[in-house]
Length: 340
Image 1 (cartoon, rainbow, N blue to C red):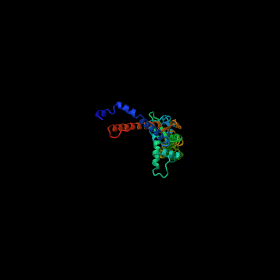
Image 2 (cartoon, rainbow, N blue to C red; image 1 turned 30 degrees about the vertical axis):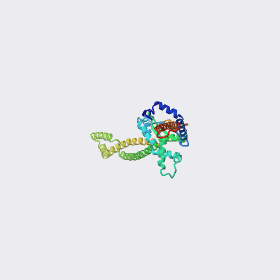
Image 3 (cartoon, rainbow, N blue to C red; image 1 turned 180 degrees about the vertical axis):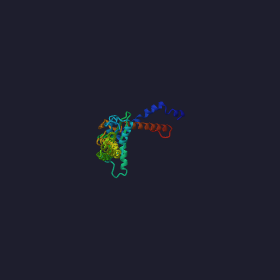
Image 4 (tube, rainbow, N blue to C red; image 1 turned 90 degrees about the vertical axis):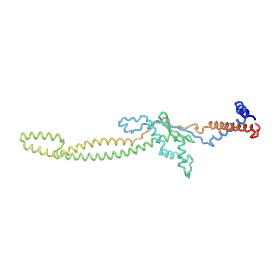
């Protein structure tokens, strides 16, 4: 073969003729690969997976009691990016995963043997590959669950969405319980202190002290009148009252101011206790559910037509390369030319 023939061996004309010569072989290769793709993408070899999704918006993370008791917090307001990220962290938490594993017996469902040394690692890998959550471009949070059972996929997606509220309420109620206990203890201490102070004031009032400043002023005026009129008996009585006021008046004022301040503090603590109790007794939703998960009617994995197409395409390309190599070697006389 001369150099000219070698250089033009794979020009456009020869390529066209190449397909004319080998179209039957290429057709058989592509068809066979497509058949194999159909077979190996069937449920016998690849377990089909169904997908269900839940779509929800995060709610504003705030105390319901503060919103109700009027601190300019709107508990009906949609959450921002931080609230969405916080919700995603909860959805991906170990607490939710453990509850889902227990609720749906995923070790059994995923056919993980009890004597498997790495059964927890295997479960975690399968769980993470089948269950995911993400923030959408519009600020919503989407939960995706894939499973070989369409009913199981829908149930798991809805359960995870419900658990997001359960877990957050558990955390919130733990903190609310601690706040309530501290506030209640402070309330009881202040109440006892108020009662003690009132008893002290009652004792002082039994001595004739009611209003320190007003009494002192009034008695001083009366003393001046009695002195000017020579009322010795009246002067002596007033001086006795003034002696009592001078001795116990300071204590009376201190106890009275302490009672007023403690009463104000008691009101604040009582409000805190009411807020904590409201948070403790009420179940709050941290999301606005947009779409529940429903049972999928079509599988999402594997994409069978894509597997068949790629199998036929790859086999066709490999067949073309193999036949071109064969012709090239045969034309050079390296291998004997066979019947085409």
